[in-house]
Length: 497
Ligand code: PLP
Image 1 (tube, rainbow, N blue to C red):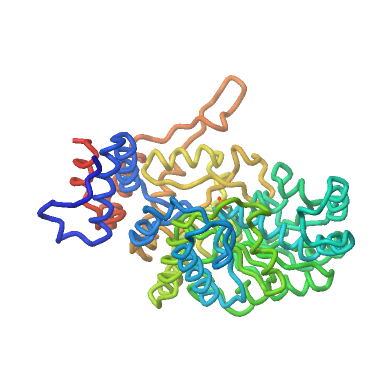
Image 2: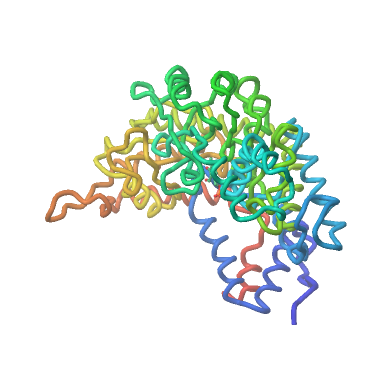
């Protein structure tokens, strides 16, 4: 029997979000104690490991509550007020609110909030651009706009007419994303994919070189955006390059959408006025639920809205509700303060790392992420990632430009400040984090093997590890993760005591 009321005498002392969270754990535990325990254990783990993963954050309990409810039951294929299912009135309202709030927040003509993830959003955008720019003439030639009228040979003709369109995106090895044309991703099967990198002397995008590549490639889509590039991008320049070769400028702002919403990236560094199509995730710096979104100019709106059936099936109404809540949160002035604090923190972290002798790629950062080159410590990114995690800090290894160790072992660490900033940490804590990282890295050595030096196994001096762990725990106890959640009551509700 599911418990529907919360009767603890301490209930009034808890925020509404915390009461809801606790009640949810009780309800889940009544069916699956194992799932309830895993959720509570995740909270415990997050409270005992400092999160520096650049693509993660802590979303609000309001966002989580909007996501965890009966809206998940609804099918709502189509778009607001034009559905393939009956009974979508409330989903219509929710999706319309999410898309209107997104349009206002980012100042773009159109928003499509159905993509389940950033990868889905990119697929929707690619197909919408193809359909707008390429498929329409093929359909016209076939004298129909109704796909159901088309025969197999018709579809063959369409495929051929779409064939060999070119995509020019940032190389994965230089900081781009898998979905930007990486050879093992479907993006490089859909398109004849080409890449641009960074300058070997500065590790920055060289716009003159990009122009030269674009002149050669003449892509249908010039794609800007990154997962691991620590600097601003000049989108005015990007649009100039795209226009000069007749390409559509698409920007994937998955990592820095929160910095756009929070008005840190303005003028030529704000992609929205310059790119015809913008994609994003909603769960990184934007601090919403896990999901994706496409923003676009009117020209692409019709095809973007055909994300279903082009790429997606039914949307996730509960996640769209959470997106609406997150976009409203991001529209508040406090969110702008938060976004500015993210960048101030990453700059403090980067300067403190340099002061502690670490090698920071490009020498600093303009955004929420810092790339550290760990080769001076004689270890790989993989060893560094594991050593740091052992000492209570979670981050991920990453390739650095021109990485000799490849994408598995790597030579770098990617650090982000979106999550620690949400916890309330500021410059002093960033300095402390930098000193912990330097302590661990400078006391980690690779293991020797019969064939040389291991790229995976390592040893951290126990004394340094102990000191690092104590410092990380001290920071976490000063800034507890989801401080309003009552851990003892949650443990009890999940049957963990
Ligand atoms: N685009 C960029 C730039 C990303 O960094 C990511 C994920 O890290 C994605 C797209 C894919 O997002 P998702 O993991 O939600 O599919």
